[in-house]
Length: 349
Ligand SMILES: Cc1ncc(COP(=O)(O)O)c(C=O)c1O
Image (cartoon, rainbow, N blue to C red; front, side, top):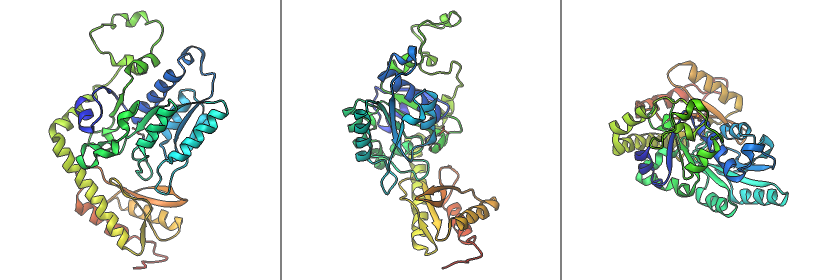
């Protein structure tokens, strides 16, 4: 966790802990944020309307986490995004002011670096400024895109994350580590610990209370833990920072090449910018035709595309993240897509 933190350019003071998934890591972040803003809630249950802010493009795990922690789905604000699917800081500021004026208590903002649908990146510096101004816990969901910050030329994507209260990065998404492994860091281990502590340690755990040992179950809901760290250790040791950078650069290059092909093809269009290694695109036809195209391509068993909806359009998603994926694979996949356009309308090329 120390190597990863260093390679990502996060402060040494960030305390690291491995969770199974980003969903569980973000749930812990929201729990710590509640403990921080409303310490009495652990005893009495939450009595005030604590408000959590996240983008309309945030992953559903943030809503689930807020529900599980008892914040209430009505107290989650989905901040509108700009035309490139990034959270709008002006809209965030307006929502906070509205809630404060209504007597509610803003307590947490979750920014996303690499949203699920399109891998857009929320403006972390502006969001960190607002979080500081309004004393909000800032959690950064960098589950997908975080590893890109290992590349020198992408280090800037985490600008502002150094000021976050917590952050999650998923090596099982884009750092070649098999499921499941999510790296969670917080600058407030004391708050994290309090949020999952009971007033009295049960007798059956008393023997485990050794001052010298760091007991990760003191910082998370789970007591038992798998030895997940080993598989990440192997990845970091085997590839090294430069080796990882080379693979990630390859993925980024393949995504840009594919984006170029799509831009040049009159039958297709890009549906979102391509900041990382996911390409969102669509056939210039109806949503039904795009759905049929997706089914036809996936039915070949030669590749697997996923889908989403952006601006009301059904969109195809091609994600590059496996160490075995080559430029030829992407070229072949593009040919397969091109040759699978809806037969009823045929190619317009
Ligand atoms: C941005 C983002 N956050 C969180 C998650 C949830 O990840 P996990 O499956 O590790 O809970 C995803 C999954 O796609 C995601 O894209």
